[in-house]
Image 1 (cartoon, helix red, strand yellow):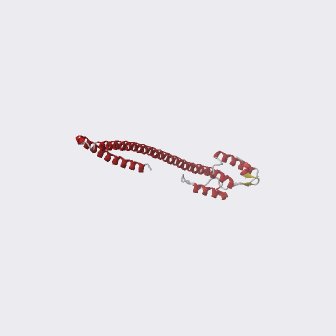
Image 2 (tube, helix red, strand yellow; image 1 turned 120 degrees about the vertical axis):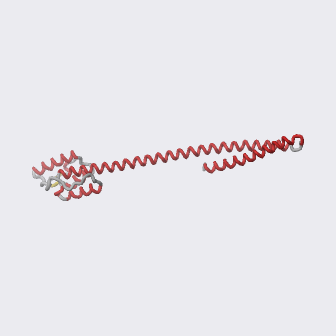
Image 3 (cartoon, rainbow, N blue to C red; image 1 turned 120 degrees about the horizontal axis):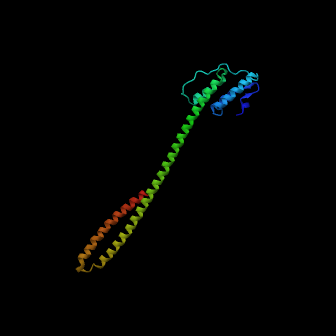
Length: 200
């Protein structure tokens, strides 16, 4: 701490002291040092006695915020408010308010981290779902190709049986199976189309 910043030849920089106390630059321990230096300077008659009163009133109990802290700093312009009791009270208020601001900042930081985690997890889930849908779509396409091939082979076989009445029953059976394959093809095509839309 640079004591010359606060106690200069023939004058005391009260505003600098109170401002730095409010910002936490000057600690309670530093205040004790400053008070001793002020007392020493007054005894040497280097500066006039800055104290009119020995205590500060009115004090309020823990209803402290940034607005109240700023108010306390502003009353230092009145010399009758400035004394050791005032500075220690100002240090208590400053520490409490700055601690509250740190708690708010900490909660905000935690909230941002949780938000980022939710975003990452959401993206991973969406990516996993997209991969699952993609695999399902590929599976349906493969199933569709197999069914088309099977239907084509059946139609070719039915065509070769067309002129033989003695195997009519077998031909009718193949035609029934072919119709079943056509229904299956329609069903698979519909499922594949729905899956493709979901995957977009």
